[in-house]
Length: 405
Image (cartoon, rainbow, N blue to C red; front, top):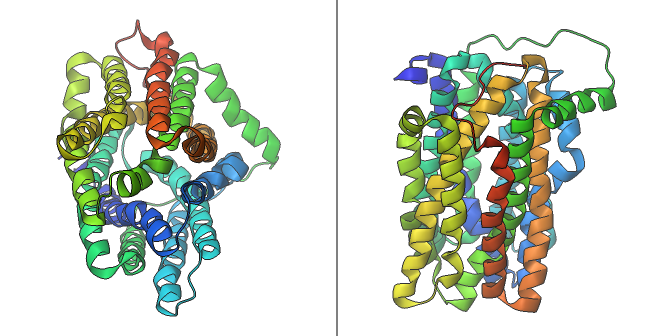
């Protein structure tokens, strides 16, 4: 059972499970809603992903400093309730016939803002619920949630969208955030407020930046995350439109295709810890990163008929790789960082990752208009593979350090 023996971690895990499943609905429903109902262009669809990640680019570092000043569970609960209200406004507006692209952009931006605080607080809260030696197992359990959502979510979302429509399907996502908030409220481990100290926002932000910049392994991993995030965002900004418009696939087919392609994520969630025990965390991390890059080369080869198998194989390999590298990269980051700086370090790394998303999304939408969508998918795939070279400082290691510096 590992970390699941911890009652409060089980509550966090259950909150995360259904929330992840619900969030998979808006990954499919929002771009399809913009494309099929509101008639949005490829560039306008890319703006939605840009709006979702823009808060990190603007306020990510500040959010990390603020999260190190406060208790984390109230932040998590407030973020869940706020996201439920924002997502729930979409089906309400659609019911009254007043939904438009400006509201959709505003909702996506608001959800992204709250998700920024949730993600930073969530990653900072976990080491307070489980002992340090259980962090890889706890992160693997949470990665399994992500894996199950990746496998079950798109197919379910595709059928729900097909049966009820895009806007109505988003109501299920709003309910998933309420579920998460209810389970988080049941956690009983004391969430101690950090000791009062002199507040200086820029100095606090600088402390987090210095930890990331000063540790060679963390610096290399963070740079790799940022570059892959940029090119992956180019891909994600247009791939649903590519499948819908270029290949003419129905929503339920896109959902089913995504489900079959993401079974690698489920396999990774179940095997990542044992893989790390067998070959070492560094080799597992590097292997997952290389597999992630190689698998992406198959996405642009996707076409009608048997060539759809390219999408499935690419999805299996990339989803397996991303879960493996996430488990060991996140565990290392949590273990190496002094507790009082964890929020700021998490925010710094996530700002590098998420700050690249709006830039990549805009680049994807812009390049697709000039080069075409298939050529843009090739550019994104090549960038993801080449970025593995940034991990060169890890090549002679077997184990990642697991103590704070």
